[in-house]
Image (cartoon, rainbow, N blue to C red; front, side, top):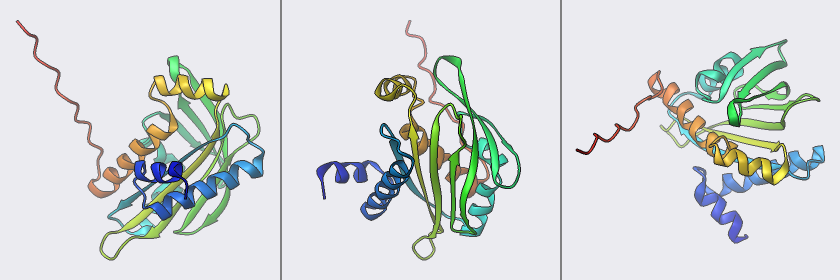
Amino acid sequence: MSEETIARALESDAPLAAAVHQRDVGHEIAEERGWHEAALVGRTVTINRPRAELYAFWRDSRNLSTFMENVESVTPGDDQRSHWVVKAPAGRTVEWDSVLTEEVENELLAWESAPGADIKNAGRIEFRDGPPGRGTEVTATIVYEPPGGDLGKLIAKLFQKEPKIQARRELRRFKQLMETGEISTAKTPEAAPQG
């Protein structure tokens, strides 16, 4: 196993085996679509809720904007499609239609952006029983073709909109919402003026 794979696994919330699985799934998704500049985002979080409940919440695409901070809206179309509007750097937005490509009830949802998307993307969210008494392991694997290649990734990182950073935050927000019914909005108190 390469040092890069181990480093990625250590930065992930997932065990090493899950990180390797995410990498393999991501590479397969990118290769199938011929995306040569694709970037991979993979995260796993354990949520102390039943798998069926988490799956049902995620399956209703209208719920996604409740915990994804940069998602302005997700509008359902038919049972397989939804329209996404997402905040981007410099006050802009990007939009795409997403098509559900695979579904296994209480286990898996996979999607792909429809042709003409501002950002080509595809991915899957998997729900597995966690260790006894610990709830459900939720694994998100997303592959996207960044606009402008490496330059697009750099600009996004500077504005903290880079998907690897966001994926970690959003899965943690999903965990908070599902376990407590709310998302913490506590901010660090500002320092008092020095006088």
